[in-house]
Amino acid sequence: MAELSRRKILISGGTLGALGALGLTPPAEASQTPWTWSARGSVAGSGAGTDPRWVWDEEADALVASLIDRGDVPEVNRLLWDWNRNDQPLPDGLPADLRDFMERARRLPSWADRGKLETAADFNKSRGLYLNLLNGVGGGMLSTAIPKEARAVYYSKGGADMEDRVAKTSILGFAVGSLNAYRPDGSCVVEAVKTRLVHAAVRHLLRQVPHWPYGIPISQEDMLVTWHTLPTFAMRKMLEWKVPISSADSAAYLHVWQVTAHVLGIKDEYIPSSWDEAYAQSDQVLPRNMGPTPEGVALTDILLDQLAEQTSPGSISRPLCNALARYLVGDQVADWDGIEREPVWDPLISSAWPKLVRFREGLIPLPLVPQIAWVIDEAVRQYIMFFLTKGKETKIEIPTTNRPGT
Image (cartoon, rainbow, N blue to C red; front, top):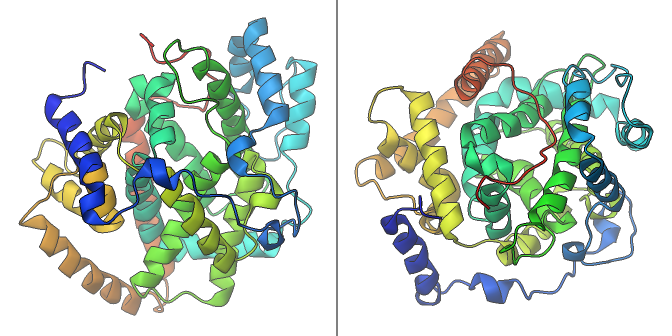
């Protein structure tokens, strides 16, 4: 990893050494924590109780490994390029085994509630600012403090072009938050199924890296950890900020992510059935999966540079982005990620943001404000996607190689 600066590596290494002094649990020690979360708290209501660290996606993994070994992936990617809508038939010409799998994978679970999915869309309309910030910046900073995820991203094909990698990740995130996410003309099912295929490909490919010592990546627990850095983290932060959220909106926001977890290939016995169960599961899996790595520090640096360029191209906005990221994820994660402290911006952000939330929430009940807020938030989302893709059409595609040079 020649491109990692000496300073950044020292920051990461220094944080590892400081864990004991700070009274934090070292990641290696936390990783030994046994799995105790009960499947009775899942949407399935029961399960085998198997530790999700040792469960992957058997059906998708065998299928995609076969596609790669047969040399079918380039043609599959070409055929799936124009598969964009939830109600769109799969394209002709797909291998029969892939078609059969995708027809099953695209079906919503029997417990999916259309009413809640529509309520979630309305919730996204009025709370898009918070959700985009928390899922985008906050979730991104948390993901780089997850050693297994940071390494999987860094050494896979996407790690060589982080703008493209972030753009493709954003495609799924924006699909979940769109007003038509699970409607026939939406794209959430499409992007989730494609992402499931990508995960299977990464599992197959990374194990071929000669110096990859980390076992099979993207286990069920790894996916749960990522899931908790998105809706669970976002809900907790909004409650911390005292954003008023009705019980119906809260349940609906959870539900859209429950359905998304299912379509991504997370087994129902691991998907929390309530926010209380989500918080309990998050409190178990995040501590045993988080910590600093040189790869995570390097990826954080790239992501914050991208954010600074998106926020104000050509300006010196990186210090502001550092402060915003630290405010969102807290000092522990920010230190793990090697985010520099900003003496001017840190106290300003922590003081100003709660006031901004109170001001904004005072306006939300007024007529047309949610619609206007959505238009502004959607414009920001479109700008971010345009910046990341350089205006080029970008789709989620199955990789056939790892990061060049690995």
